[in-house]
Length: 139
Image 1 (cartoon, helix red, strand yellow):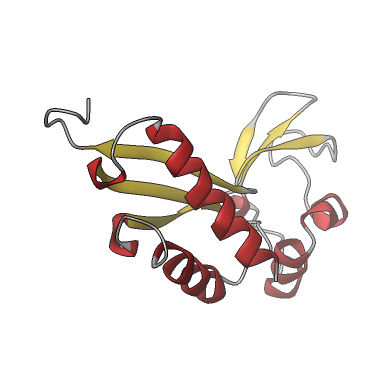
Image 2 (cartoon, one colour; image 1 turned 180 degrees about the horizontal axis):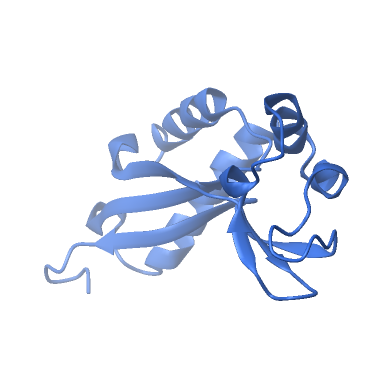
């Protein structure tokens, strides 16, 4: 159900970013979905299309992209992606996708072995960019 709330928030944020501009000025919205965001993309897409159908711009302007998970070691500052964690099994990856906080149970810094790391990117839903028409009344 939170997919609907997230989709609604994305649409409302896009409208807010337009300010007083005509919504017809909006040409594209790139939405980042974190690799570790527990979200059903199919439901999110459907919710987005449904919500946008009631707004003054087409759903086809919303483009979904995946933001890869990037971790940063607090001990040695090494950065790495989830896919670079060679010792993590497929079952463990699934657990991390379901509950990102469980990453500490399975992942260690590949450079120094520390379990003290931070998720830098790859969680959450955000608007990466808005494309606004340059015609008069839109700029």
